[in-house]
Length: 139
Image (cartoon, rainbow, N blue to C red; front, side):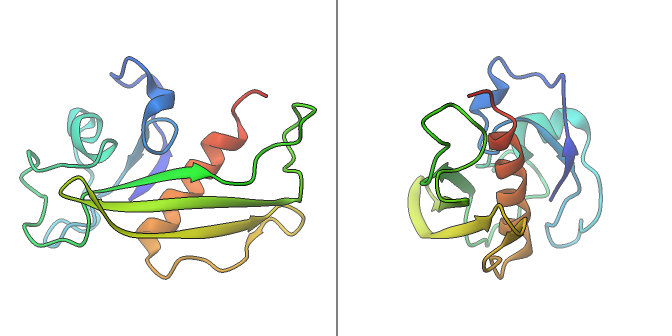
């Protein structure tokens, strides 16, 4: 579960990470809920998905990774506000390198609220982190 930005991590291109940058957090795997993995574990597994090499990864799980993308972009003037004041995020959950679930989340910039949060709190938190990273990108 991502909690705070992890600047200075050991990635050659942190902006290419699934959440648009590195994040520190705590584990949500059964038996390890709330535990904080060491930084090298968070860098090698938690921030990338497909954490089969992590001893805490449950054998049975819905997905291995979640990918996000923005459907509604910024204004064509290079500003930070979306054209329609709503940011639409597409998410794709992957299992064994194949899509297993997908959907769209919408963030209303005017009210600074999600139109309908995702029912899974982990996926919702990841969407919030991705959106935070995306909003801070230049142009």
